[in-house]
Image (cartoon, rainbow, N blue to C red; front, side, top):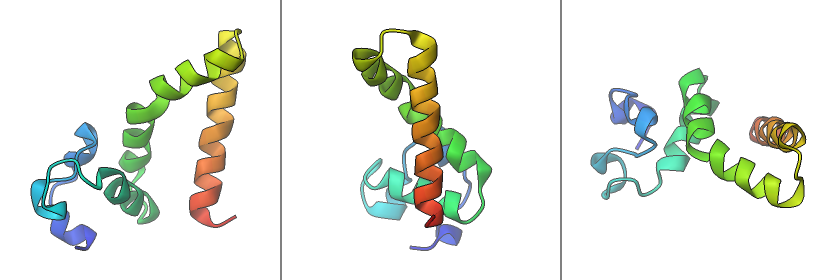
Length: 88
C-alpha cells in the first residue's frame, strides 16, 4: 500500500505500522517509516531515532567506553543511514 493508505502519521510515533498496512501490527513498520522518510516526512526520521538510538548507543558503548565518543559514533551512523537512503 502507498503512504496515502496509511492515514494519520501518528503510527510513526509508536514505530508500529497500522494493522491495515501490513496485515499484522508492527510487521514491516520500519519499511513504512523509511518510505515516509523518503517522501520527506521529517517525523519519520525522528521515529527511527527514537526507536533505535538507545540500542545503538549501548552497542557503541561495548566498543567505545567514552560516552561522548559512543554518541559521536551513533551520530555518524545516522548520517550514513541518511546518505544510504538518499543513494549517495
